Amino acid sequence: MPDRLNAASEQLLRELAPQVLGAVIRRFRDFASAEDAVQEALLAAALQWPREGVPDNPRAWLIRVAERRMTDHIRAESARRRRESTVATEFDQIAPAMQISSEVEQDDTLILLFMCCHPALTPSSAIALTLRAVGGLTTAEIANAFLVPEATMAQRISRAKTSIKSSGVPFRLPTDQERAQRLRAVLHVLYLIFNEGYVASIGPQLQRLELSREAIRMTRAMHKLLPDDCEVAGLLALMLLTDSRRAARTGSDEELIPLAKQDRTRWDQKEIAEGIELISTTLPKGSVGAYQLQAAVAAVHAEAARAEDTDWPQILALYELLKRMSDNPMVMLNHAIATAMVRGPSVGLELLDMLDRDGRLAGHHRLDAVRAHLLEMAGDLAGAIKHYRIAAARTTSLPEQHYLMSQAARLS
Image (tube, rainbow, N blue to C red):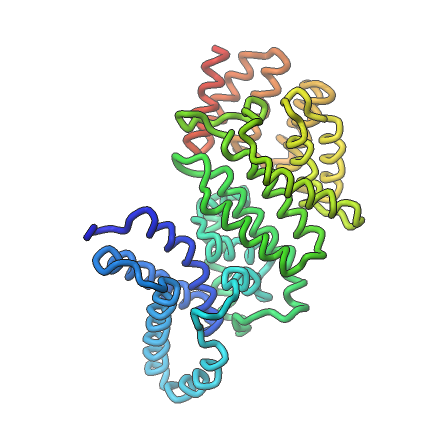
């Protein structure tokens, strides 16, 4: 037998981890201890499965091991605090209702999403914690999504766990009212998980398909749960329309291919049709949100047979609306690109200067990459080379780094 897990088993563990964590938290109501227990169960699987084989029901196996770890932990804590009898009573009360069965057809990952958006946390802290628990993102990847240093994000996640513990408010299934209150944060988590899967912020791979596919799966489940929610439908449409380009985003050597140079015959027409149908049905309902507008932008790109056929004035109008409802620097960056495509690169560069003064994208490679592209459009090749190189030095994604350096070399 092999002495380590094969790729299929590693992928299985990544997919099952949030489901197992959700099941354990729902039973024991203790996030920090449950997270430790699930990590121990995953380690046990990594050590035992190569020797003994993957069990028939790997999810139930992991839950059983994690629950044993939790039981051991609680017994030890109870003994230390002389509260064994009290804890035993509490367990007798909750165990029958929370007992996990492999036959129960429910999405524990979706439940965990709502549970992690805990009332003791601020929205940003809840989202960060959920990205760790559900998305499986590293602290560095979450920091990239929030445009903050890794150390800052590590402190934020640690404080979130402490806040939950000190609040005395247990992890539990949210009521319908609580679910409605937490929906916005949950959608943002799904959005960020998809983005990290579509453009991995760290490492040698451009894409992490397991993340983007899981985000689409969970958003489909959310749409099934809330079919009349326009922003849920908008987010699903955005993911499908964006994911439709996946096969065309890399070349034979896995090099990055930008949107304008992609072979659009390789775009997934089934995903495009589904995404356009979703957003076409949703937009006329009147309650328009940021995900719907972003999906509409993606639909405009999808409907252009060639890059030069893109309706940039329509895209610019959509970003104007987005700017009014969202103070997001990435929206402002995309607005600058659309402005440059409609009104010329000099106008776009003026908007980038405003982003410089804003400060939230200071040191971010995408700001320099866009500046380089607009400088190239304006004919300032020396400036473009400079900023392509700066952007390459700042990104932590190797495919993006190689692409940016190739752009600088092309102009040299």
